[in-house]
Image 1 (tube, helix red, strand yellow):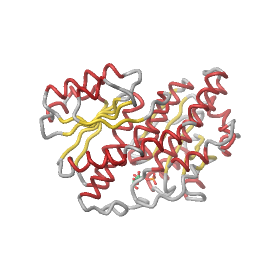
Image 2 (cartoon, protein in one colour):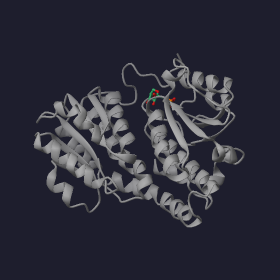
Image 3 (cartoon, rainbow, N blue to C red):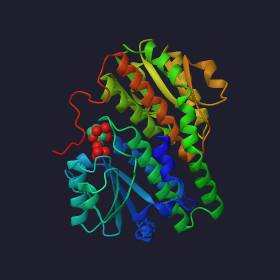
Image 4 (cartoon, rainbow, N blue to C red):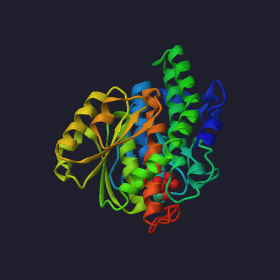
Length: 346
Ligand code: F1P
């Protein structure tokens, strides 16, 4: 994962590496709206991009499940920019969403892993993630690579629109360049994550909670666990818990909190208190050096401190590892989970 990111982040002016972006940067910067489409993990990467584009470039964004898009009558205008995200580049629903948006005059930009794939060919332009092939069926490094590329695009568009200063632009690129090393640091906690996985190997359900940039990560953590271990798991925005899921919390419910030190830290602390008051067992992903949350919860996994907008690139790694270890301990084939296809082409 770190290597695939490093390849993407080497140049000083990193967005220049996104070949397809150069001709479409202006169009993205002038877009009235960006519509991101994808399925599964790619849809989660789209959700992260929603936070990125709105925060950095102040563009109105919608994120659509490609699998539902064509069954509505979506309003698409000529100056809408559609970003289609896909690891395989062959997902039938994403291709259908592209064709629909194209027929209504929108411009389509692809973020794909597989060079020359059907989706790459169907789009007007695009940027490859160059993450290399996923060995397993479930997307892991594809997610971090998609988020990396979408972050680079959002930063480039923000700079073009002048919604961030030259100084912030340089600062963000510097922070991105440090990410591969920080991802490697997360792997230093692998044996601790394995111990936690051992304790929860036979859990029947899991809940994942996060806020802001960590909300899509909560969804992705739950999806990874479902896909490869077949444990029922749900991800929610942490504030949504009190609107229903809180009824599920008791001593048999493991709750994974994305609780890194960011602008929603205090709110997350109070969500953790609510779960602990109901005897839920909490695994918290915290920023290195945090002393408050480790006192409150049952298990902690530390990740290095990063710029808030880059949080998903590191906070998703322990969740991928947790799912991996649980699945292996349950005797699952993590590369070929039952019922899942590498490319969903129908
Ligand atoms: C989308 C996806 C993956 C998932 C599995 C099935 O594929 O839902 O996220 O892990 O492989 O397909 P893609 O369009 O990103 O290739």
